[in-house]
Image 1 (cartoon, rainbow, N blue to C red):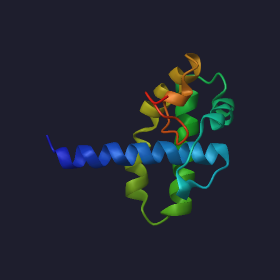
Image 2: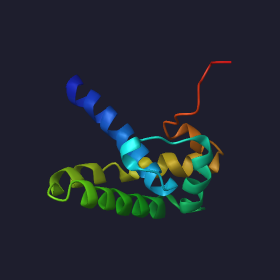
Image 3: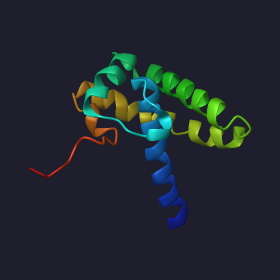
Image 4: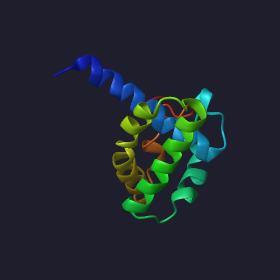
Length: 114
C-alpha cells in the first residue's frame, strides 16, 4: 500500500469534514475549530435527511468550499466529491445515534481526561 498517500488522505479528509462543519456552524473555515455546541447547527442542517439527501447536501458544500478557496482546481474538487457518500453515512448515523460529536474533530472535547 501507498502509506504516504493513505496518510495524506486521512489528514485531508479530517480537514475537509471539519471545514464542512465550520461552514454549517457559521465559523471561519480557516480556523478549523468546532465545539460540541456547534453540533446542533450541523444536525439541524441535515435534519432527518436520508443518506442520499445528505450526500447531495455534502456535495453542494464541498463544491462551495472549493469554488471559494480553490476555484482553479476542479480536479481536486472532483477527487474530494467522492468522499460525499462516506461523510453522509457517518453524519446520518451520528444524528440517528445522538453521536454527531463523534463524527467531527472537536476542539473542546478531551477523551479520557478528568
